[in-house]
Image (cartoon, rainbow, N blue to C red; front, top):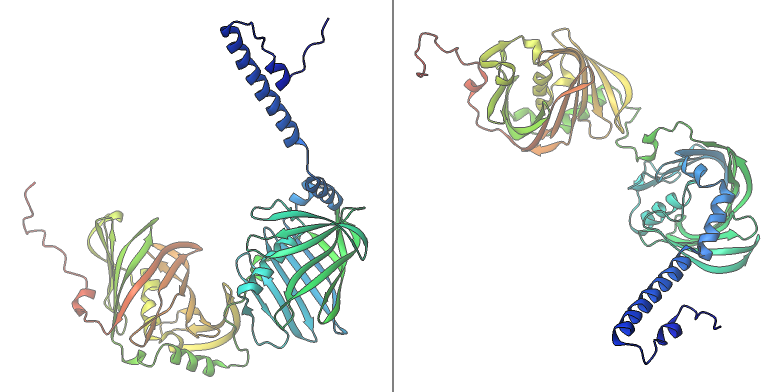
Length: 495
């Protein structure tokens, strides 16, 4: 008895010369199906077989603490000392998902900062008066290093290419060599120990003040920190020699202020007194500020969840009018210096109606912003330096002629209004009014805010976005005054 023919091309070829055409055709089709299935089965087996790179990475992840542990990390912070040309300095490294990093050292009171906020790399060298933005290849290197150096990095991160380039003997013994290419094209060589699966060395490029150059970092003294194996000693080797970093503490998932990764904005001068701040404020408003009598502008306003067209008009000393097209319904908020009034169909106000003056206080002070008179109105005192977003500002406490108390914040470098806080009312809401001002533009020598946001008790009530403005515009003074109410005796249209 013959053994059954093996599945394959030889078996399919023996169809029998005397077989009928129909049987031959059917058998050929069956053999083709068998071949396809066999080939597919072999391909599936091959696809499921992990490559050597896969095995190396799996060993590496497991040595570091396992993928589940790595993926649980949202941030990390390490402290220690670094040595540069014999000078010891304390430093802190802060990392935050997905790719933010900040390294800060203290060299005898002078700060060394290198940071990446996820989009922009920046830093400050010891002795520099303020941070600078890194650009070009230097920025790309910082971006790649920020991601690769994070304790949660996986080599399958989107956009990263990894190649296993064999084995090499390095200082610590035999290692697998990985060539890692970041999305921006930056290439790192990473060496993984064949015995323990931990990273032993990395070759990359860095800027030590003389332009980009090749450097290497050796990783030593691995210790368990909350289930993770982390190197507590790193030795950077460059044209400056060896620069050891020794870690004394390492925290996993600590509380980290996200603002520290972003480059600081304006910086204030603590040596300036009140007179100096006010003088720079007046200069910042523009040389022609005192000569401007009217301003008109156009843009949009964000109100009740809609962004709609808007025009504004201001006239000295305190008149203003804001016209809003609320999807075909005209809205008006105006003040002629004596009477505040509005038209608001969405609130049932069809005819021009008077408002208590305090109801438009937040908008009314915009006149002060335009003319630059806010900082010199009433009594002012310099309360110190405080931050508004990422900018340092001078806080002035203002007591107006009407007895109102305001906290005014002027930019630390441009000396323009950034924020005003006071108690009052706006659009039928009362409480703490917080007005933030930004995106200044030049209009005939006068600096005008391009974005004004008004919040009441922490909730944004309205935001004005000005796209174009004209100083010295022709404006009818009567447009600020509330029209007389319609005569009820006058017949209206027939219904």
